[in-house]
Length: 436
Ligand SMILES: Cc1cc2nc3c(=O)[nH]c(=O)nc-3n(C[C@H](O)[C@H](O)[C@H](O)COP(=O)(O)O)c2cc1C
Image (cartoon, rainbow, N blue to C red):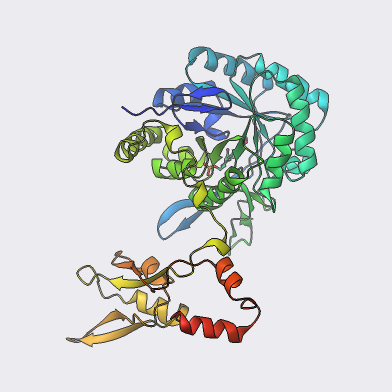
């Protein structure tokens, strides 16, 4: 049997799956339901400053018949009184001693306010605190959330205030709405935080209603930017997690968030450096029971791969995240069509002909036209494989016969090639590079 438990920031989670701070983590009722379903951790919906919420709060992007592939909200932090939340947090922890109850916090940027909320929160017996420096709407207009997360000096300052009062591990939840998230990670590391949660939601406007001309969602005719989440943001979350995991100075445990709905999504985050993974939109769409499939899926994958425990593979793909200059430029692939599967829709031809490199021709046979790859013209871009609706195209390795070579090596061996098109042309010809 594989061991799904995870050690993170001095805590032990029975599995890597946590409910993220948001609507699914608002109440004791939900904590009980989540833990009954099998979630290892529960990050309580952010508590702190008093707020009032509006309607409508959510917007969704549908694509190709699939609903809510992207999700946006202008919801604020918890609108339930602090005392009610704190009482329920204590009850949740008391009832579920083997699970992690983490409480997300956000108050105004005053040392005393942070000291007070930290003390009251840890008095509940909860396992850890998560600082919400990420909420990109509403709270930021009041100087909280991403207004803090976007300024590294504020991240350090407020985290230091929190660390003065905290006796339990402190995670800082980062905003992706910055140009360099590694700078934010350095800022919280400097203040001795215990871990990083990332990402919070991304600034976005979901759309405009072409009848009413209102933005989506709208509040009685007015709208604005909200936080983007759901499957559409996963690639951004993966990238940002990998950047922080890769940085040699940060060295803090990461809880990965953004677009996780399946065990596969979660495992990808873990391979790129997240020790645990949090889910918000996935639960809002599909319910707490998705964790059952996550546990099953991860267990089977670990058995198949021969990983005994989660720490055998957490971060295992991080070294593969490299810079362009280190990629093997000699590596070449070309497209190959499996004609047993091809339905002759010719979408690959259209994509290659108009949008890529004119390396597919149409051949007529028995009154039907079908695509054929022109091997010598194919630059190996992979567009045809991506548009094929029946997955009948694959990219095949071709040996160029020149071994491996990176851009850095090529420039070192051919001084000036990066500034002289003549030299570049000569090099490309010699090494058989197709150009379009
Ligand atoms: C409706 C909604 C409310 C949210 N409220 C909070 C919150 O109170 N505190 C917080 O730290 N993050 C909040 N988040 C952000 C999520 O915890 C999470 O970081 C983000 O949604 C990305 O994950 P996902 O794609 O699984 O939803 C909220 C997200 C949504 C969609």
